[in-house]
Amino acid sequence: MRLTDKLPRVAPDGLPAAVLLSFLATAGLFYVNIMAALVTGLSDGLGIKPASAGLIASANVYGAAVGALAAVFLIRRIPWRVAATAALLGLIAIDLVSTRVVSVPWLTALRACHGIVGGLLVGVAFAVIARTRSPDRVFGMLLVVQFGIGGIGLWALPPLVPHYGTAILFLALAAFSLATLAMLPFLPAYPVATESGVTAAPAPIARRPLAATLAAIFLFQAGNMGLAAFIIGLGRNAGLSQDFIGPTLAAANWLGALGSILVVAMGARFGRAKPILGSIAVTLLFTAAFWRSDLAVVYVAANIGSAIVWAFTIPYLLGLAAAFDKVGRTAALGGFCSKLGLASGPLLTGLLLDRGGYPLTIGAAVLLLLLSGLAAAWPARLLDRAAPSQD
Image (cartoon, rainbow, N blue to C red):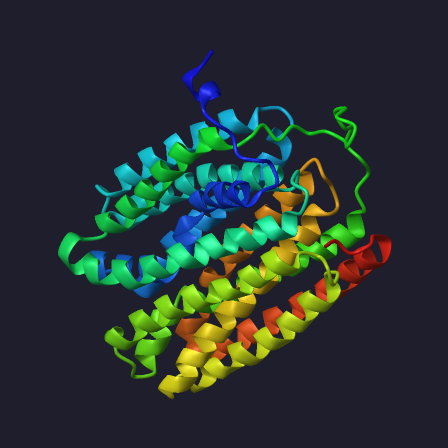
């Protein structure tokens, strides 16, 4: 008997399990939660242009999209605990190597590899989350963890880069993966099973509603991350100081967790269409408010408001994808499209900054978010009509 077999396991659908699963899903993509600190730190620490820093960050997330797509095909063939352990060890190794690389091309390639491994880990974690009784609530807890710890990273890491270089960014990522690795043995088995305990055969998937859901996830993440990755530069361009921007972003991340806490409390009690469409409408207002970032109070309100509704909306969108298949394949596909959007947003923003500046990038974000709401409306209403709401 292995030593880990003697350790106590948490209840599959309890709050401790939701927290541990949230750390597991966060570990593969934690750099997204500190994306603004990463982009600014790479630019300042390596002395490169923001577009080059954005390219490195985008390569990381594009790699994650590839890894998440691979997870769709692997989750039924490889034990999820084995895959998660191997991925966490791989992430730690790549982050440690990244501390020694200063060449932009080599660092871009290395971070793309990191993304592939991390994306595979997140895809596996999402597939396991889909096997819980209420994926929406677990995804909500995931955002609580991401925003809470991400806020610490955004507040603490940028001032450390001038003293310790870009290595401090990658060491922080490695430390988080190491902590998650220590949590892994306490999670239960989460087999693929029906209510009777018999292994389930893959059920047919409604492809067109799923496609609309995946498009909504991609557009929503691209619209939000396109601004979030450059939000420090946006504030500086508007005349705000780093001493003001840092605490603002930290507070926005911490308060943003309120949105995901609300999801944990609500679940699917009111369906998915109303929460998704209502929150995206509010997101449009807060995103448009960034046009007046020259007003400090508006910059603060826009960051806090958009963080809260982002943390509220994405768990429902990911839960919507998970609802199409309890094996976890569509949840992994949702993770793939989420990462594809998170990667494409900063890349698009970096290109638009050279052509129209921040006003154009804000307009692009508003458009992407609007299209996301339109794409999500049909599948959300369809599933609400097909199944009773959950308490």
